[in-house]
Image (cartoon, rainbow, N blue to C red; front, top):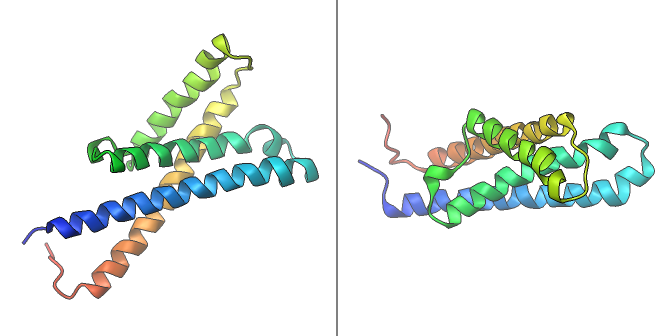
Length: 146
């Protein structure tokens, strides 16, 4: 007994919702950091790397949101190794290619911060999907157990 079309639809609705929420939280944290935390707190991390962590979180959520909406689930980033690899490559581009045509300074610690944001995404997504799976299996009395 497999999953019906409605089951897949609910799954993709959850994927879209989770990535939208994580992306929105990332944007709100970015705004909060720039408007409140940086001006009021004298913290090297908040001033130098926090936005990069948030950027890593946001880029993975955005990539997964686009792949879900576009029906390209095979491109989704949910494996920790795919997420770390993706944020590593994106971080290298942002830190070493972008400064060639846009004013900026390369910082290898920023690449690590992007990867940290990707790892944070992985943790948040696992927590979210695990809670959805538990909730759905508790309410589904006809679950297909294999």
